[in-house]
Image (cartoon, rainbow, N blue to C red; front, side, top):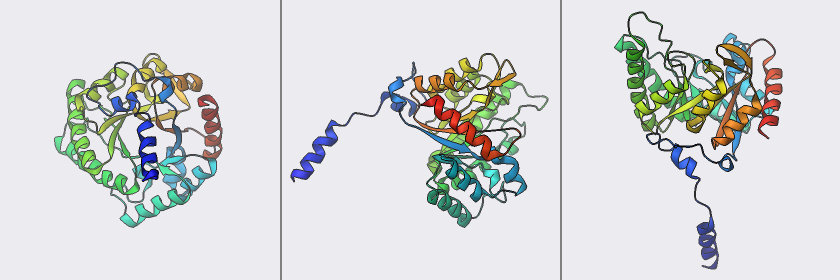
Length: 303
C-alpha cells in the first residue's frame, strides 16, 4: 500500500498537459496566439522519402533499403508516401505493409506519416468521390503501418470552367468526408499546401475552418508558400501545424532562395510545436549525401 500511495502522490504532482496541445486538439477553436516557446521541447526529425524519389521510382532502391539508410543517417522516423509501395494506387498486401513496419521497427524508426495523391478540384463529382474512396483505402494502410496521419492535397485547379470558389467548395466537401473516414480509421487527415489551388496561408486557414474536424489538420510545406514573404506565411500557419515539410528552398514572391533554418526554427519554437519535422531534399546529387548535410544543418539550427 505504501508503494501505491507513493505512486499516486507522484502522479498528482505531475504538471498538466500544455494548453497549446489542448488547443491544437480543437481545430474548430484555433488558439488566438501562438503557444509559449517552452512548450516546443520535443522535436523529432523524420525523412520524407521523396528525397529518394528517383531511385525509388526506378527500382534502383527498395523501400526497405531507403528505411535502413534513414536509420544509418540518424533520423528518428520516416514518411513513406503511398506511391513507393508496389502496385500503387492499389493498396499493398497486408503482409508487405507488415514487413515495412517491421523493418522500420527493427531499424529503430517510427513511421511519422504517409500520403497519397488526389485531385478534389475536378468538376466530375464521381471522380472526386473516387479519390475520397482512394483516401479511405490508404487510411487503412496508414493504420496498419502505425502512421498517425495521411497527407492529402487539394488539386491543381486547372480545369477551365469552374471558378476558384466552386473548386474550393469541392475541396472542403471532399476533405470533410476524408476526415470522417480518418476518424473511423484512427488516422488524422493532414492537408499539405502544395502551391496548387490554395496558395496562401489565408486560403489554407479558411479551408481548415470549413472542414472543422479534429481529424483534419495541417502539414505546413515551407517550400510551397510562394506569394509574398514565405516566413510571414509560415508563421501564420505554424500554430496550427500537426506536421511539416522542411525543404531546402523557400520562395519569396515566386523567387527561390535557400531556407533560413534559424529563422524557421524560431517560428516553429514560438508556435509551441511538438512532434515530427519531416525533412525533404530535392534536385540533383546523391540522396544520402544531400540528406546527411541537410540533417546536420537542421540539427544545428534547431539546437
